[in-house]
Length: 160
Image 1 (cartoon, rainbow, N blue to C red):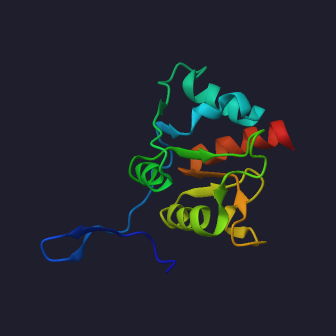
Image 2: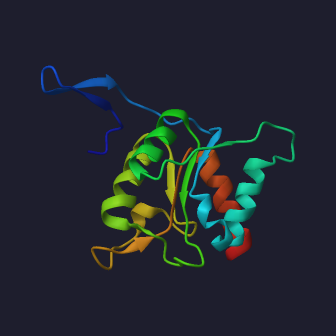
């Protein structure tokens, strides 16, 4: 409804959802990236460069941990709870992205933004995209604002 994020859990003994976390906020920066690295040979340079910075930080800080389940809801939930970044960017095999705007990217982007995070295609905010068809695919990168801003800076440097 545009008034923040509350988390609920189903209590099967009473058949009702119980409020477990109120006014959830995502961390400004996380320590986890979530991405299907099976597509690494097809990544565009922005993704390759971003991953290199997360895995092998030049400033001596701890590298990010890679976690990827393959379920967008599970991966985005972990990103919401622990902070970090979820990426399903465009690649050589899927230049328009793989996930669907209306029923995958928009709902998750809305939740992340309501919790104080960001969601982008690299070029624009996911929620600003005007749908062209019901199954439209788009690239998506979402999560902690500092992590997403860092990705956008690399995207602009390498792609625009």
